[in-house]
Length: 294
Ligand code: NDP
Figure 1 (cartoon, helix red, strand yellow):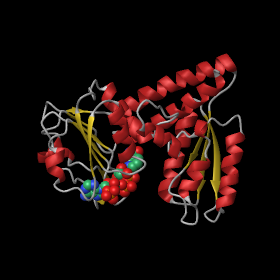
Figure 2 (tube, rainbow, N blue to C red):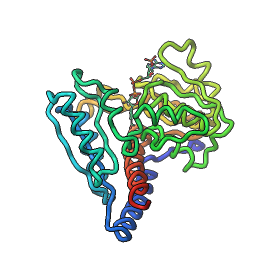
Figure 3 (cartoon, rainbow, N blue to C red):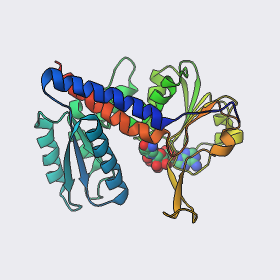
């Protein structure tokens, strides 16, 4: 359909990364200091390692110093907390990222709560999420994927205020915080989850759809209101024997069909994904500026 706009997250993310690189270089020239991001990974999960490598590489490209900590799978909870405290106290570290999920013997919530609020660049500290949920309060950091979704909408000139927004999914890392952000932006927000009855009838009313259910192509083209803006966060591997890897990535939205109805839509991959890393860099820069420029 010639009317649909494909939202190119890769290009927007690249623009943001250039903006960040310029700011980092200005900080470096003015104060002789660069932002530092501590990236902590526990264990050998392949997916986590590839996310962490992407984040470290992205830091290097914009001049952010990444401090890498690769801890063994069997690290104790108290040793991990000790590491977090050490990083909280390290003045060269402006952001701390502990890659999730953590091994089962470690209490994730406990670790996230130990990260200094001022260095919580993932925005997962309960106090930052709490402030995100409260009227008239502002968190120090907003979670990266949700922030990337809003950034994609605003940079494409899509008005959020007064719109019907439907978020599919309510996880702590995507669905819930993106719902809270949309509410802060004055949308009327409905959250669809696994127990929702007749999700299609709710999604049909949406001017803005944020899909984060982790269910390949669950949102059909016929569920989409003509002209709606669709941000597809879902990143699902489905078998594809024609690919060398044996799989390909698809979103939560049936992309081909949705293109016939939507006003604009993000592809998977190349939509919300690249924005997540760009927002992590942005959060790290913002955290560093609060310290370096004060
Ligand atoms: P979770 O599995 O933690 O949460 C999924 C949410 O979707 C839950 O709230 C669940 O409901 C809901 N859900 C599941 N099935 C259905 C259904 N059939 N209908 C309606 N709602 C449903 O996933 P995440 O939030 O961590 O991730 C969601 C997707 O986004 C995944 O595909 C993930 O790979 C991707 N992702 C992409 C990122 C990126 O950078 N691009 C970053 C993070 C995630 P309930 O609460 O009732 O169980």
